[in-house]
Length: 150
Image 1 (cartoon, rainbow, N blue to C red):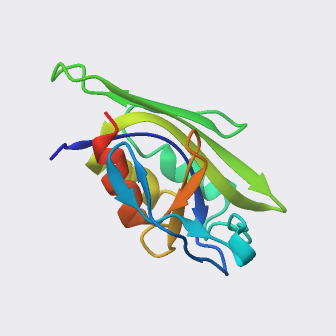
Image 2: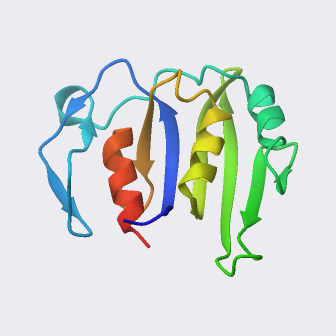
């Protein structure tokens, strides 16, 4: 079992209407993607529970975090342990709210959870859209997939 996740993912607040789709296999892992109405992809109809500005302020509390005014951010670590990691991210607004967060890279699980807390998790349920694979997963399935994706 790995102590880190690797991913390129968009994070959204859980949509109003979704359901499990038939299981698929990605990188040897059985996963249950989420679907919207009539087999369409989910419609991400909620903004996050925190604002764009609040998410930026919270991100700045993470050690070695750099956050730009346009929503881009970068955090890296592990050099001292000889196990370097890095996350590039971007906050996206829509209609005055934080609509999604894009994350790419790899990091220890504890850092990933710290990033999620900045956008309202665990109080707000999130879904995870795998950018390259084009599927949306629950948190549980995403974590299993991201742990094996190194």
